[in-house]
Image 1: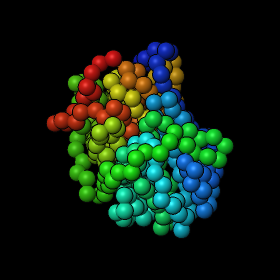
Image 2 (image 1 turned 180 degrees about the vertical axis):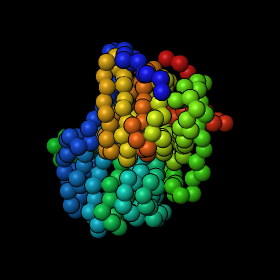
Image 3 (image 1 turned 60 degrees about the vertical axis):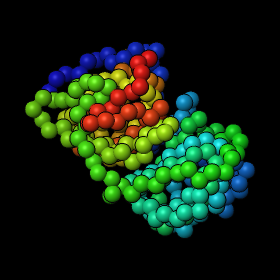
Image 4 (image 1 turned 90 degrees about the vertical axis):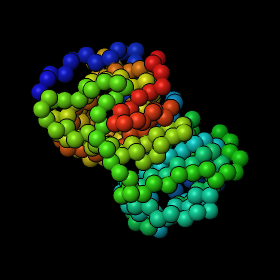
Length: 273
């Protein structure tokens, strides 16, 4: 296996890592002025600046009443089951299912089992004390998507940003991808990586990765290196070089914005920065 470089990227790159085990946890009691019937256990994984990522922990039977955000959002289930209502339509959601809504879509949630839920939002949420704020109320609309994970066909990713930089040579790296939410402002992928897979590359869009299970080694920001466990996240601005190495078979969710182009087994940003 090739030896990955000691220095990846530049210290001036906008990069971020957060340990899920040590991330701050708050109990949200109010969503944009809506008082919740029970405090919502919320882990702050990515606080901004381009987007934010929160991890919600809901107990069976817990309800989040109808509310409307002022910003676009994407949700996906790490584990558990929920009843999701989007613009009046009811969906049964289970592990790895995902949905998104434009600003102003009314959404309500009911946990059918103990559930861990991710929520990406851009521009980011603001959490102050026990309040979650999205800077105003969007005009009511019904623009949303809902994706059943088991109905999404996976495909083998051949190139990223025009490059074929996966390794090691001669090993089936099994870099398989499912597009759970596709645009218009952000895209959510589910990926698998086989142990030993590595990649050294640069994206021309912002991104944040959530490790569902497995272990990863991540290098970026000049001399920064992290051994990532399930529940950890890492993120970077467009143009930041990073090196990924799978220390075990793993699964990830990856949020990218602006939404990249997907075509014939490649991921391609619209422009170079």
